[in-house]
Image (cartoon, rainbow, N blue to C red):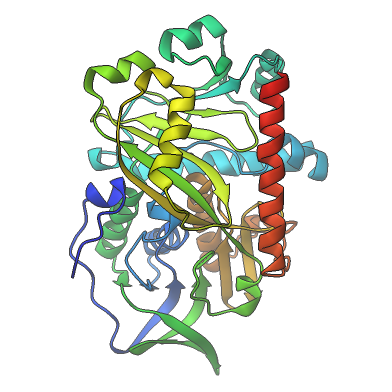
Length: 425
C-alpha cells in the first residue's frame, strides 16, 4: 500500500504496520466507530477499565483532522470561557473549564516517556495581541487567574520583541500550562496502549449501519459484523455516517497548515523561542517552530476543504507576519476537515439506550477529546453522569448545504472585521 506523506505528521509518524480489516463476525462489549482522537481516547479509557472494546476505522487511524492539526494542547474550548459564563453562569463555566484542564493532564500522562509525541518540548503558548490596539490584557489575566485558577502572565511589547520579530504584534499573554505535540503519534501511542490491554483495532473497515438485535447491536461493516452491547460513535465530520441525526448536527469546516523548508540560522531572524504562538484575531494564525528549524504554520477557516494554491496562500500569510523571511520555500501544505456544531462546543451524550456519541471538537480537540473519552467511559462503566455538563450543547440541525453557506458568510464577515480592526487599529 502506498504511504501517504502529504503532511508533516505522516512523514514523521511512528506506527506499526496497517492493521487488518475486519472479516467475519466478532463479539465485544463495546464497539467504537471512528479512529480519530475521540475514538482512540475512548478506547484507551475503556481498556483501562478492563472492558472489552473494538474500534473500527474507515481509513487509517488519525487520517482525518485529528492527525493533521496544529498540535496545540491547552485548556478551554473553541467558545471563549466568558461567553460560556454569560450563558450558563460562572459556576457552570468553572466546572466546564476544569474538565478541559483535566483533558490536558490525561494527554500529558499518556505522553510520558514518549519523545515521538514531542510533549517533552518546553511548555508554553504565547497569545499575541494583533496590531497596536490596546486589549487590556492585564485585566484579562487577573480575571482568568482568579476565577479559573490559571497561571497566565503578561508579556510586554518589549518582551514580545525579544522573542518574535514582527511588526504585527504588540503585547501578549503567556500560558505556561500549554503544550505542543505530534498529534498523530499521540494517536498511535494510545492505540498501542489500548491493544496491550486487550482492545482490538481494525483499519480500512467502514461501518455501514447499526441494527438492534434483542439486547445487543450489530454494526455492519464492508466485510463483516461486530456484535456489541454498546456502541460509541466518534465520526464527527467524516463523510461516512451511521446515524443521520449526528451527521446533520455537524458542519465540516476546513482549516489549513503549512510546513516550511528547514530555515537553519534564518529562523532566529523571526523566532527565538520554542513556544507555540497564536493571536487574538477572530480568524487567527497559530504556529510553532520545530526542532528541525521548520515552521508549522496554521490558519484560515472555510467550507472549502481543498482550496487551490494552498502553499502560496499560506506562505504569503506567514510572510505578512515575518517579511524578513522572504525567499523561504514551502515544503508542504494541507487541509484538515474539522467538525463544528452550530454552537461550536463539543457534543457529548447518549442517543438512545447504549448508543453514545462524541463529536464537534473542531478548533480545540486535543484536550477536549481526551476528557470526552474519559467521561463516556465513566458513564458507561461507572454510571457517572458528569458528561451531562455538556447537555446544553445539543445536536442542533445544521441544514446542509444552507448551513455551510451560512458558516462561510460568518467567516467572511470575521475576516473583514479583522481587516478593518487592523486598518483602523
